[in-house]
Image: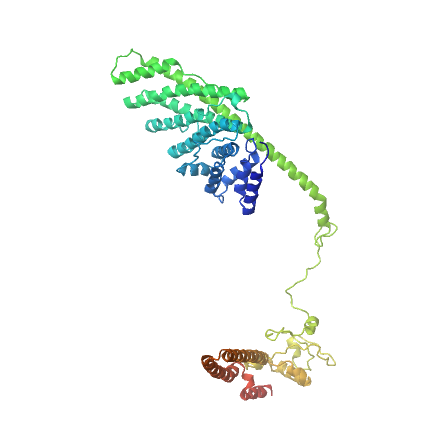
Length: 559
């Protein structure tokens, strides 16, 4: 089977419709294609683990859902993608997996669709067991052994005796499940199992490096331990020798597959005399007779063993650093390619952007900034424009107060007000602007402005009556506007009352119910009282210019 199946395309389309980009990417990374998950999909999922707005439980549950598929290809690729995120993704992902009670339940998985399905099902069961143990190990020690700091000041080298004796068995258990994958070179026949083997190979190198440093720390403290601790330490060291043999066989398979020899670390065996020295020390603590050994010979044996194990650790560290360097080089090459692509895009967009700049009305042909004064949208309009503008609002309560420059008669002392020159003949008023006499409004005339007021009064008397009435007080305009508004509201309310009464009367006739007739009569009485009160008090209060008393006041004020 090759290529994406119809089921894969339908599932991806469903996730596209629902708008779940994470689920769609998981689906594309775990298709039925017999090849490892594509790098672009894995990189996107790694980026998702680093985003705080991505739901990590939803991402993990999507992988768990894919492992319920009956095809070994889909299940195997889901495990590979999960392992990839556990190693290279944000630590939040493995933390969530460690917090779950159940992980991959694939101990009975079997694909009976073909002969290859039977073979690959065995590796799926082993691989899922390793991933479960990896998450459990994180739960027990709260860190990943493949990511701990190594060296003389590393985590495993600086751990105390009690914690060390509890931590090393956890590493041993994880190492055992990794080596139980037990694949041969002739069984790596497709891209899916090859991808899983490469991840296991990298984990084996880092895990054994941490395991090796823990053993070095154990040997350095062995001769200072108590009897029970020495017994546990000796058992741990014997198991370490066995696992060293198994890891060497695992590395041989990696070399046969085609992995570069420079990427495979060298294993240095500890001298056999070290095991004898450890056993003799434990026997002496138990009170058994042992061969006499000086402290100098014991120290030399221990130093030789530690140095050989340290060389092994250095070899593993070099392999890990080489892998990091390769990853950095790939990232730099990718960034360089993206930069070149960006420069090409900018070069293509250059002519169009320059043409747009040349056509811009802001810039001149010389490239300088145009010095034409901008239009002030908030400036006071000119007299010519304001004269042609007619009021189009019933409640235009804020007219433009414009000073009408009428010719003023010769007045003694006019020069003290700015030295206006008088025109020989009076010019007709071209604007029906609003002439406001604030002194008459507020009722306080200052004695210092008598001359100017006399000039303005004489000028106003010389104008026609119609033009004087065009400049009536602001209060008159406001009262008339309110009167018109209240009258309109009164008419609307009256029409609504009449319509309501008609509808109610029609309903009472159709149903022949006396209750509606009573309601109709009561409503008519109530609304009649309301309308009369509104007419008498509302219009009288809000629109006083309708009353004879107010009209009399206005006539007296105008005179």
